[in-house]
Length: 180
Image (cartoon, rainbow, N blue to C red; front, side, top):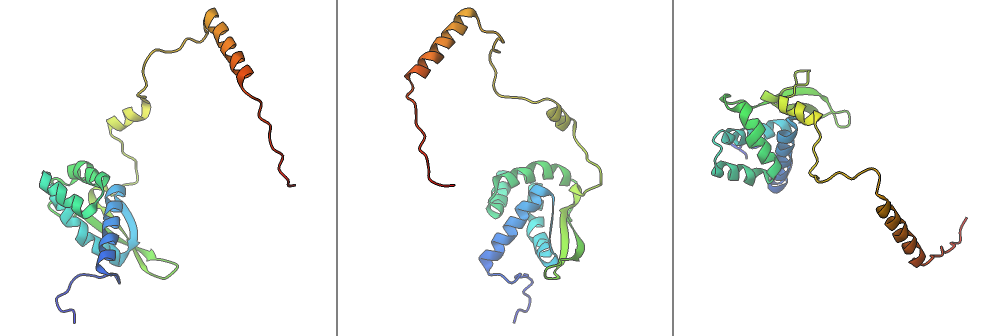
């Protein structure tokens, strides 16, 4: 009997369930919302919300604990950076589950789970720093720009080099292959 056992096993063994929840959590944190089955969304909420609560402390120990659950450095950076700014004043309830239609293949109940402070409002919002980054493209290469016309000595040297390399390269014969 499973008296008092509140864990939804999702029809999986322990290691498979942990891997599933870890992958769903990473996807939720990086994409801010995902569509999955209702049962998985409810299990994910129980898995993710304590992690998001740890983000408020923002010390080395909480980072290590979150990383031990997620095993993804980029997700941890997003969680402690972008997500931490928005949830600082929120006392709890960081996720929202919105029920959707059933899946056509197997008629499973589908739901969208999203981070509440990143809910889609219907309009794109960009910060001034994102606008600057979009307008100005930077490269890491610097240095002197090449002149458009080479001098007479450079042009003569290049022709000599080209002709000498052509003269020294052996001619390669292509093999004919049988076929249509």
